[in-house]
Length: 212
Image (cartoon, rainbow, N blue to C red; front, side):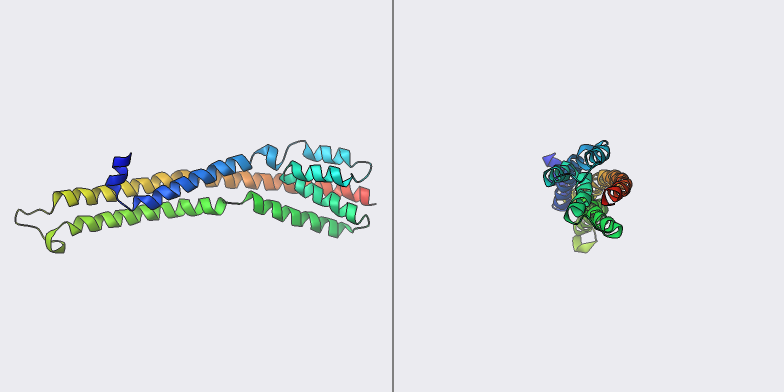
């Protein structure tokens, strides 16, 4: 592996840094976008059951908030109603929508960085290819001529070809998985946001019965 890095030259180091960062982001997103941490299936029904007769105590609301991202949204509605029992439906809905926007921002965290790596890695590979071509032409005497034997420096020629090919390949090796994981996480976040939107709408209707 180290021999490949040596053959690829210095242009491969930014690609290695991108690959390490992409791997870290993928692991972090897998850990953060678990269903249990975002939108547990039974959480909405449990929240409705707990608050069926009256608004729960602040301690219960805090426990709900710490449960998951969806719990934060639902807790915002309960906390708003706890603070002002006569709050209007529009204000209640607005408070939960604001919590939903914060939740969406939290779920989409680092996805832009992963998309940037997927876009930039092929360009970095292309940069390495161009540098490799420069090495090839630089190996020719007089900036492109030939020597007395009709050939350039074989060692520099081989080095230029190695830089060009290795960087092109490594750029694609980094970009393709990054793009796949970005698309996967993007679809996963969109699904969570839809689930949370439907849950929040149902919870608002439930809170309206408590408000009255």
